[in-house]
Amino acid sequence: RAKAWGRGTACVFEPEMDTHLRARLEMEQDIKQALAENQFHLAYQPIFSVATGALTGFEALLRWNHPRRGPIDPSAFVPLAEDTRSIVEIGAFAMRRAVADIASLPGGLKVAVNLSPVQLAFGDVIATVEAALRDAGLPPGRLECEITESALFESEQASLAVLQRLREMGVRIALDDFGTGYSSLSRLRQLPLDKIKIDRSFIQDATEGSASAAIVEAITVLTSRLGIATVAEGIETEDQWALVARTSCNEAQGFLLGRPMPIAEAAALAHAGYGVPVALAAGLCGQP
Ligand code: C2E
Ligand code: MG
Ligand code: MG
Ligand code: MG
Image 1 (tube, protein in one colour):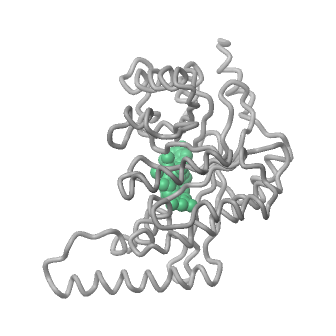
Image 2 (image 1 turned 90 degrees about the vertical axis):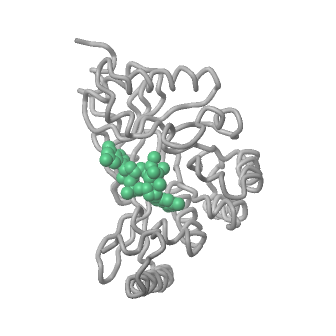
């Protein structure tokens, strides 16, 4: 059902086009209502230091609790929200909420917020971020904005200027899903980047001696030479964690280490000074 909402190709038959357009219009309506009625919220996935196992922060991930359809994943509504530009408003909500939530946690933890290319091109990202940080009293260094490589295809210069300005403010910029986009390596030179997130497809194929393992290793070497930090996304198994831990990757995130969770649970982890479970951490330090 969510599929009908996606970015569709042109429909040949009128009745189909009709259905498609109606679904889109309905979705657009639903998004407006969702914003008005606070149906969007955020889940927080913990991110850990690979070297110490300590919790370093959370990634804020959008969730939509639809009154009739139930929970809807971002992959099902973000593309349409981008087409209709309602992602500008949704994204502004996510930014304010995430910054306020993280400011209430102990321990100087960071929060990573995903930015859509449409926000960069058409939204007032700078003003939104400034207001969010000011209202919450969060130091800019504790906010990380995640962008994807495709983010820069539309309005390249304007988007770059926004990123540069964010960086001047002290906000960090991370390149998400690294390795899946177009011209990744030249992006490392062009973009004002503090961090890259290695796409989970590499992590998931990274068995001992595999091509993916070699790629992960090489990416961490390359980025550390460039002064860019790395996060491994999508760690699901102990083997993947052990493999990543042998690289110079800085941080890790994945279902093995922690699922996206409500802010109350995230706060509980923060208050407990939670880290990567000891058994896993020991494996890391090269013990037999
Ligand atoms: P992303 O930014 O790459 O976020 C990581 C996604 O991977 C999340 O999916 C997360 O739940 C999932 N994930 C984390 N660890 C694992 C793992 O070990 N295994 C597997 N299989 N998956 C894992 P989610 O929450 O469904 O979000 C999907 C995408 O939607 C995000 O990908 C991001 O591109 C987009 N998104 C989420 N929140 C926002 C937002 O506030 N604004 C915008 N513009 N996009 C968002
Ligand atoms: Mg992300
Ligand atoms: Mg990602
Ligand atoms: Mg993604």
